[in-house]
Length: 372
Ligand code: CP3
Image (cartoon, rainbow, N blue to C red; front, side, top):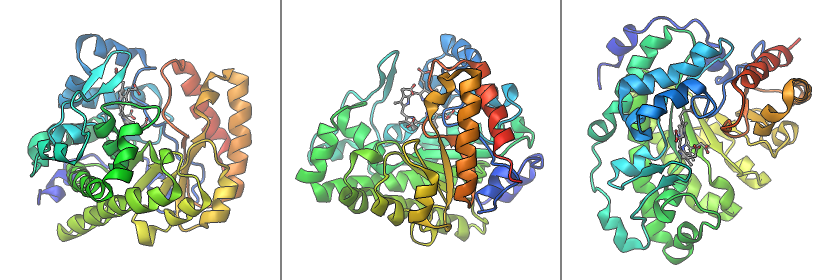
């Protein structure tokens, strides 16, 4: 753990620092671009690997996770970042829960947390290095494989989103089980969120020490909460994570890395204001989904925070002409909004996208995000 300097010295120098500059608030010459879920089911080379390996086998085998991380980087020279191949649900696994990835169903947790007595089933002291060391190994391996082409992003799920999976037992339309915890057992819910946050913080620190150059926290189910619930339940453990990550890194004399919060659907003006002051939250960049206008968001949040996003993911089904028109329109809008901008989709890329349309999308972002 103390060896991060040695680890860092073993990596080739970074040739493309556009993302890291934008993450510091610089209005870069063009927007750095990457795509959430850029490694995955729309890529034939990914599907080929999945024929012979289960999903979590891919996550847990550093050589496979690293190869999958590099697939989109090898295919698209226009990507400005890589994100390590793994999943947010490795945290519930480390806490002692079984998580399965079922072919057309997505994640299944067969023993969900239904009431506070179920908390006793979770590991009391999670040894993150032991449970999730494979991820750290994958990161170090990937930094070498990247050979400095682009920076590597580490990530985890946000406590609320992870709690939702742990209580629902998988995806949900109503969020009946997880949200009823907030009403029936608010104090126990906060304890659970805090326990999850502690594991997330250690997971993020481990990723940085292994070579991750930036971090993102995915709060995919933020939009299920009322503004009050976001402030009361979701935000405190998120702040706990960023502060804990920063303080541990500082204690190791590490300069620290930028952190992005992607709180999908947390779009109430009051919530946006609440989560957009890096001095309070510890998050330097806010990821936006496609339902908001960056000019409007800038009116609420000012220029303190960098923004990431927020092209409509379905633009990738729009055909060459449709893609170009929309990326030109939306990029012009983004440049008017001003401030640090990291270009991305407003949520993950979807399975049926044609790989050549993703390539065209990247060409369009390079072209139209240029500042004059
Ligand atoms: O390329 C990357 O972005 C890196 C890898 C990555 C995966 N999942 C791989 C994955 C990342 C960053 C994630 C994050 C993740 N996982 C989130 C947050 C982002 C979001 O989309 O909101 C969430 C909610 C999950 C949980 C999860 N994992 C679900 C709901 C599913 C099933 C649906 C789906 O997206 O495929 C997964 C499976 C998963 N995670 C796959 C991949 C490539 C597909 C699994 C397969 O091959 O069968």
